[in-house]
Amino acid sequence: MFSNEQLQALIEGRIVGDKFPYNTNNEQEIEAHIRRLFYRINRIPNLVCEAEWNHFGSGYASFIEFFCYRKEDVTVVEEKYGFQEIKTNGIIIDICRLAPVAIMGEDDRYKKVCIETKEVVGGLYGTILDGSNRLVLNEKFKLIAEQLKQALKEFKYELLEDEKLKQPLSIQTKIPTIYRKPKEYLVMDAIFYWED
Image 1 (spheres, helix red, strand yellow):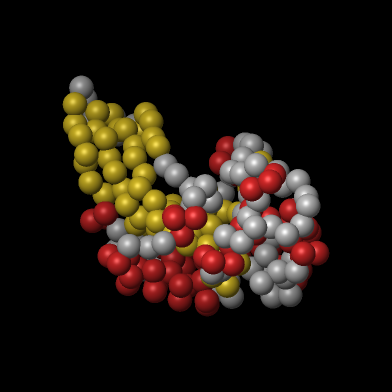
Image 2 (cartoon, helix red, strand yellow):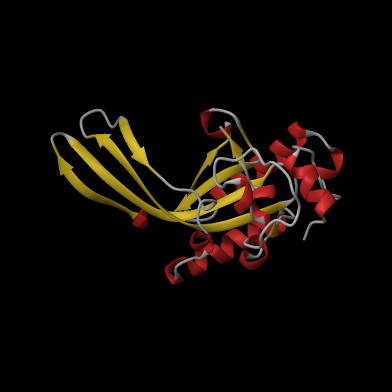
């Protein structure tokens, strides 16, 4: 997957890869490529894809997170006091900004919406980085997952394997991440990290 030297480069925020656009070492070109992938995914019938482009509002994220779902996977859990609690079951894809790789998993997201104004007033969502069990997809997502994998392949992204990502990191280093403590670092933490 990656050598220890490449993992250390990723941790330091350096771009690794010999495939376009990563071989250009140009962050704007890489983001433009990821945006083209985003638009490609949004052309999949009956699928909605939302993206977090802005490092979750603070710090630095080594990845851009896509959340993809079908309209049928959105349900109203509760309605009271003029608000709706809405649950969305979908697929998260984290696309690395520093190497042509991605990971995919499942998440349930919740948001509280004012019925009258449709304004979102609160929400709750997870990440596939905080638990290795999240890199598994429910059988109901099989068709969507295949379509997403095809889009990733078209854009030359390698979907990384769960078992390799869960291995302990074999180098001594400091990763700017909020997900794990230094003695608990996994290979995944060197590639996909968020420094808040």
